[in-house]
Length: 192
Image (cartoon, helix red, strand yellow):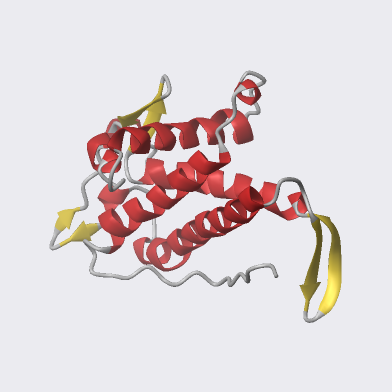
C-alpha cells in the first residue's frame, strides 16, 4: 500500500464523502419530505428530480466510507456492539492505521473506549451510534438485510456517527502524523 497516496488522496476522498453525507442529512432533517431539486453544471441545468435523487445515494456512500474508516482505525461491530478489530483478521493489502508511523512507532489502533471518548458528553451514545453505522453499512447498504429496514438507523444518529468518525480520523491519524486534514471541497448555502 502506498501510504503517501492513502494520506493525500484516498483518506481525504473518504472523509469528503462523510462530510457531504453529514451536510445532506442536516438539510434533509430540515425538510419534512423530498423537495424538487435541480442540479446545474457550468450554469446549465443537467438534472431534475427530487432531493432524494441526490441525498439518498450520497448518504449511503458516506455510510460505506464511514464503515471503511472505522475498520481502518481498528473498530468493528460484533452483535451490535463496538469492539476492537483483531489485527490478525486483516487482509495483507488492507489499509490500516498501524501501517502508518509517527516517530518511528506504528500508530495504534483506536480502542472502543477512545471512540467513546470522542463524544464530549455522552460516551455511551458514541459507542452505540458508531456500532450502528457499521451495521447500517453492512445490513442496510452493502447487503440489504430485510430485518435491518424494520428498524433502520435514525438520521440524527447517522449524522453524529459520521461526525465522530471524522473526529477520530483527525485525532488518531492526522494529529499524530503532524498533518492537517485537507478542507472539504463543497460549499452549501442556506435556503431563503
